[in-house]
Length: 193
Image (cartoon, rainbow, N blue to C red):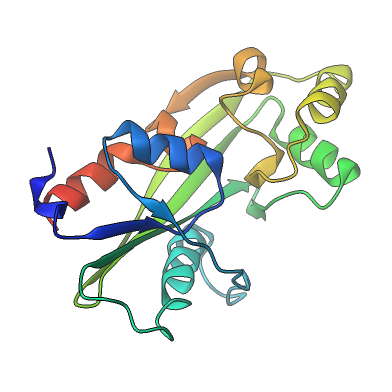
């Protein structure tokens, strides 16, 4: 599948083991190359536009280098939006607890922005999923934070971890998007690239 990509050296610009697993899952061979990128964004940017803005920013960080003709870069950024607030990666245990308490018993949005970038073309898109949590008890939140250390995850949780098994009672849209990469949409974009 995806014979049209054979001419490219595909690079995933992400340290996320979940994104790496998901990209492998759709049958793509790739290497990993990352850069530290300032993840700030304009304060007036609509919340749903933050993830695609940041994925494009991550792709542009590589433009100061000469990209070989056969180089295809895939970048992504995921944000959790709850109560008109973007929940990024928690700063510490207290911040993680606050975020999970905010998500408890409510529905929130998860938006992943993805940029597929070559020397000739750049395509950015985003996918939104809705996730509903059941009520979480304080001791459940504390157990999760202490045992799963969710400090590298937007919204302080990984849907594929214990908290997802016991707390998520509904996902509307792509489950893999909630994990960090909307594989269905990315496959379609790559197929037509």
